[in-house]
Length: 65
Image (cartoon, rainbow, N blue to C red; front, top):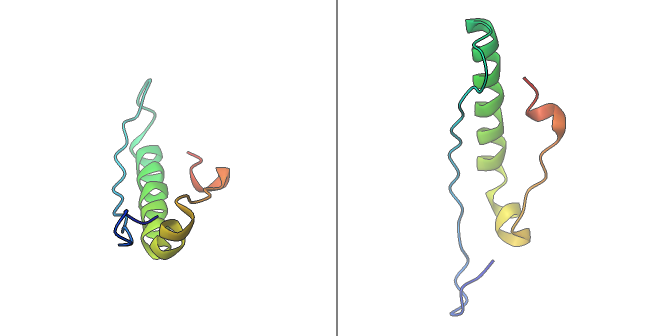
């Protein structure tokens, strides 16, 4: 994606999460936290692709809890 003057935009993504419903366990929360951090890392490593396509594909198994 570019501005009208031709500058390429850079994306910086930070993901926050909140567990909805009842608290299961600390292990469950840690599993979710690890999935979110892995997703942030993937997005950070693919910023050039995101900038060109203005989108990123996220597989279901990358965000399972």
